[in-house]
Image (cartoon, rainbow, N blue to C red; front, side, top):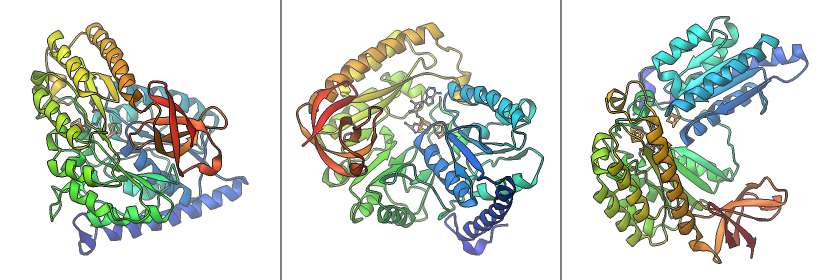
Length: 475
Ligand code: SAH
Ligand code: SF4
Ligand code: F3S
């Protein structure tokens, strides 16, 4: 039971302490077993889907580490965990495909535990299928109760049954549980959960629930803690960051949150995604233009260039509004890098509609565009629309769009050739001695460097544009 006394605006302090006690209990069992086996216990965690999933996987990894498991890349581990995505059909198919392989691994090691969680598990038909066809899966939970992972894991260790715990929704936001980080110098920070937009093609509002914002003070505290831990770049995450704060007890805007983060000492770069065009305010544009820390990169999903299709998609902007927004942003921040998402083959899309999309790509000047074939998601309004576009037609359009996006992207990205840019050195590339850095515009640069520069900011001359990345030299 949740003690009401400790609940304030959905933040639950008591729950954090409860979960910590399960970490200790599971830790004791793990130590016992590890001693009996004479080796450390291992886990393998794979994340599908978006950066919000990545972030939540870090939380699960943090708890596994604390319990005493050692992480490994290989799936021949004591515990195998998938954080799933269901935004498009192929995300689901990947998980089912890999479960078959896991079954054979489990035949060799019956003690192995398999855990599935995340967006796909919020769909009733998926859970039915797992119960029926994949009884060897040990634990299934969803998106609303990830904070309960330690408790569920402990229960699983004590049980021979398949444990399934799916919540319909939650207003709870549990702070301050242990978490691991994929990088030491940059980190995602959730500022909100869920989505209220119900774009007609999209499953996210059904599997992530209603929009809930974290308290600004909790976000600032997390960022300060990350910075004192060595992080200098944060990516603020939400399905629609532009509507941040609307549901708080004391409502506030996303731009104000950005202003609260600006003074954090040691924080060098602020990024965010995703921005819904319908909620992008003048206040945000102004804040971005004035800030010394907010990167001049905006991910502004278009989805379609046809006003008629946008209406059917329930996006609540049209082609003209989108293009005038782009113009306004470019005027205020001339060096802005714009990226986008586009769906091809939404039900009822005609050749003329598709050409409107091509037209926006011609005009908007994207650095990169992520293009997707429309995927029918059961339960969404678009799935029931009768005029689904034949696959061959959609694929043909997709290829045309991709060719244009790549051509325009190359033209646009090459505008930096010969300039010197500050980059954050992120990792060694596949080639030894060549490191990858990221400009504030989210462009990647490969250049000779050494490990001592990882996580540092260096000046690099961008010598040669290779489409989506540059070759450069340190200056
Ligand atoms: N909240 C973000 C999008 C999150 S999903 C926004 O509103 O922009 C990421 C991208 O997946 C979307 O931008 C969309 O382009 C794509 N997508 C979502 N549902 C899809 C579907 N049913 N079929 C194909 N692509 C889809
Ligand atoms: Fe999906 Fe639309 Fe919400 Fe984005 S804003 S997550 S596309 S419903
Ligand atoms: Fe996928 Fe869920 Fe993200 S459906 S895209 S992992 S919110």
